[in-house]
Image (spheres, rainbow, N blue to C red):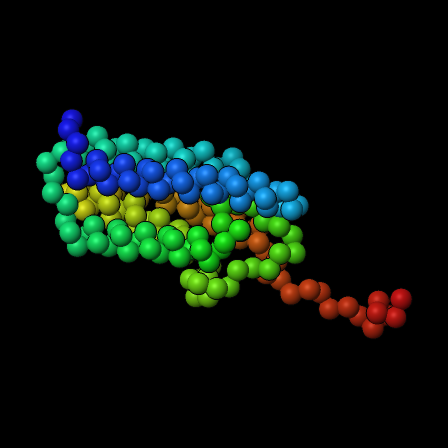
Length: 179
């Protein structure tokens, strides 16, 4: 196994993800200190294994002399811009875990103006596009297939966690206002 384009890109993505994990840990600690609650913690290690496995498989499976498809690599870079947009839009609320602070406003800027879970769409694209950029359709298919049920579960966990913050406050009756 040598070191080529794919290994260099995987190393850069790994460094990026480690930086994101450090930011996520800091934000998670702040949210928990502000009264936040983590939901669905049991599935989190599965995402860690999936993403680490994806990077390791790419690092090992792609031959060092494999030339990347420039268009797909450019698409991957665009997905990274989308990823940064998500992180910037969520700001202090961005974390790799599902942590919700009761009463905190929902973020409605950036891509969250148009959809509830843009990050998962971006991740699905990343898991497919990077292996395809290096001629590994089976890795794209495998990791996309593994990601799908985890993402569906994660979205359900997030929806339950955020439901109370999405619902309008209950109307108070005239009797309760008089008391």
